[in-house]
Image (cartoon, rainbow, N blue to C red):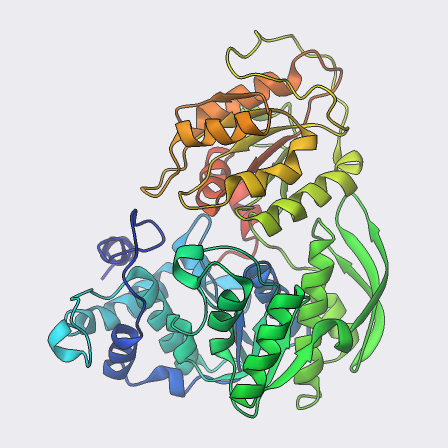
Length: 491
């Protein structure tokens, strides 16, 4: 099986990340059977760190992986969704695995997929085949079981209790901040959502939790007590002070069991300090058993962390049409991430803006009402597209004071929210807007608006979906693909 054939095979599987309409009830029968046929690799993985949560779980995974490598430890990492390349999901030592290895893993598991049928499942009657996410999870588990990295950092896909990744045996579980997302699947209260996330807790083992709303915290405490897990609150385990925002990231001082000192993060947004505090609390727990984890090494590792589509700054692209505006690409898609992005615009944007020479005035944009009069500085042009079922109004509302004009576009995904629905939301928020047929047109319209009647080009912010972020980074050229995962593996 070639790499192209492996990708085609994966694309032939049901993909709930792209599937429109209601999802089937989540069960673990398929992934359990697939792993059993593959020799139960989930039982042979070393030192698994399983990370769930609504906001920040991906960032915490990248921070943990980078910090552990800074300690000269070998790492495996499984994250989702990918932004540009499916190999981003499965990484060894900070690098997406080579195409040949990816194809080999898919080829070894593909024969078992046809064996996973309703008749072989107990109980299972709905006939749902192995999914894209289950297949990539099994591929990661098989690789990590065979390569035996010192630590395997695994991001939960959705929820926790019934997620395919929960068949792993974590040495330590992590739950980042819980908020409202995937309400139809996980429930419409923080208590219900927290209950699903708490399914990754293990008896007699630590679970590190990030800062939580009181309702979610109470539910997690109750679930930890019921599960017999030791609950560790990150803010109690790690103290953080003297946070400073710069044009290139954040610096702060941290103190924990394995040391104290300055942390310099090349990431934007104070929410990343919270995520880093959670990661440091996890490393604090690990350092009690592993003396190789030392604060100085952790700090050096964190200083090199790179996370695609999390307030990723694109200063220039390979396409001259977009060069005159600073572009910030973020995967913001729920109310918590909307507030986090708003804080980034408030704290970092004045430091990021660069003055350009005066540019010709383009023709005004034709539709939409309310150009953002009275909105506070700094202002941006927002390119926004979302999947259906998301709390778009609650997500965009924190951004509204910064938005001069919006360009609305549908991500290339069957679950994309219709433009008519997006327009209604932006009209209610009194944000002037236009629509675009695709992402190239959206970026062109955003650039037009960004340079209109200004001495310096307004920054363009792209938000609303991982899928939209990936489309934008592809359009902006190869340089941005390298920046999204700079340590990319060879073919």
